[in-house]
Length: 504
Image 1 (cartoon, rainbow, N blue to C red):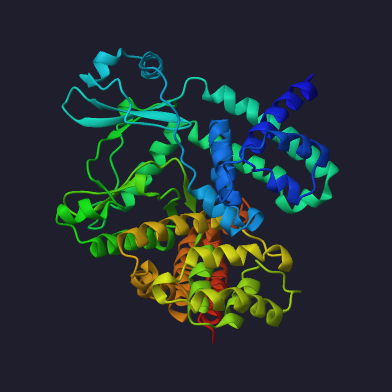
Image 2: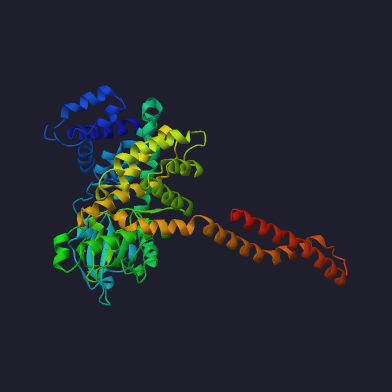
């Protein structure tokens, strides 16, 4: 039964892809040639002149919410679909017709367990935006605050579940029957899509992400994150502060309002640096629709449905790797990858350095304002399979974020490179967290933590080592000698760690 249901669904997908002449991934992988040939009967002729990725983006747009989300996932997987296709997926417009106000009202009242007129004194029935997962309305709270109310689509959860069931079946079947598809890692892509959808379907997670980001930017001169109204937020409803501003890519309006586009670019670049390197927590959907300039010049960021995280080790790797590329030290880049365990130690440092040079030189030889770190990372991840390189999904997400942010930067001033503004910040951050000073600080913290743990550890050891009938005086004398010996051993070991940590 499931086979026939999935087959019918698959025929519809083939038809939609064929109408947009977007069957190239299946053709390149030599999958089901007879089925592909049949689908091509329905190909339209007005797609000539469009790139492969543009045609695929148009097809996914027509196929609905799950396929739009699939396109967003593919935008982060340049290592699988190529840099050009991934860039076209990043431009996929997540827009759908709005659903009726009556449905939105029913969802809000069921989720928040109160009538709408008690929650809001005014509620605009016409949404200001409608996407694949949710739509947004403007409203006013009883205490006079203007807020944005995001409401999950009523039938989207079931639609996602049905499509994901098909994707899992199809990915497993193709992986089993067609070894040439292993390069695309289809089961992994589907699970990544499922995780993305699961997070976006619970608006409490988005609220938590925005709240965490806001805590990092309290009283910040560059960036502003709207406040969450937790009393009017639930799984299917998110209420947050309404922010009024000018879209960051509307340069004419910015100038008319008295804003300097170069200053706006500098603020957005510094905010991205802070998110990626200082916090290790970044907004991963920085398209112009999610960024606006407030009256006081700060850049407000909204819609935290997609975020990424980088641990400190990965941030250090990223900073050192970018420094190596930007200075043309390709051997250093290769050594960093091997030291970080991203490339197996069995791979040749010289050969990997040569591969890094092959992708770095064409980009770094461009005029500085045309140089793209996002493109550089995309090409680096593209050679990952050749060198058995392990690429973290979060780094792929960051690469897509950087490409989008660079596009925003070029719209503000095409002659200025955002990395020229942040390179000194990245260099200083790397020096602070990498090298002798950083190792000394970490070792000092480790030593302090160890010394704090010594007293309870000694008491526990003394309790275990002392017979129950031993006289109190004997315990004191014996315990003092025992504690002293252990203390000297621990402190000696800690000093040894300190010396080794400092590199002596």
